[in-house]
Length: 125
Image 1 (cartoon, one colour):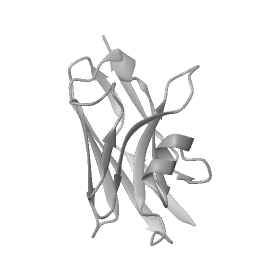
Image 2 (cartoon, one colour):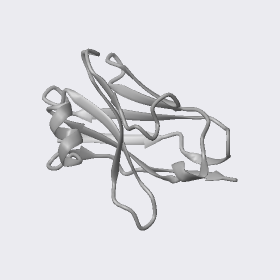
Image 3 (cartoon, one colour):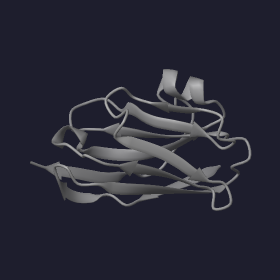
């Protein structure tokens, strides 16, 4: 099992920034891909950003490209999502995810992978 714990969400105003963190623990050796997804009320869960532990791949949804940056710390087994220029449409529960393969994770919305409990990001106008 892999345990994922997100933190850093909160209530901010449009234009503000937030940094989300996700700490991984447990049997993480086989989970080489890490990503952030989000789900707004009444909508499906969507991919936001993903990376691999070796740092050779990074991917972003078009809606956040240029505003969000994903990074990782292998020693701490943590990933981060730096979000700038937040807008009301970014309001959602943000979930950390882990799986063996990033491409498959994105294409299947992390089907069969691991999930954190989510952290709420609310952006007011």
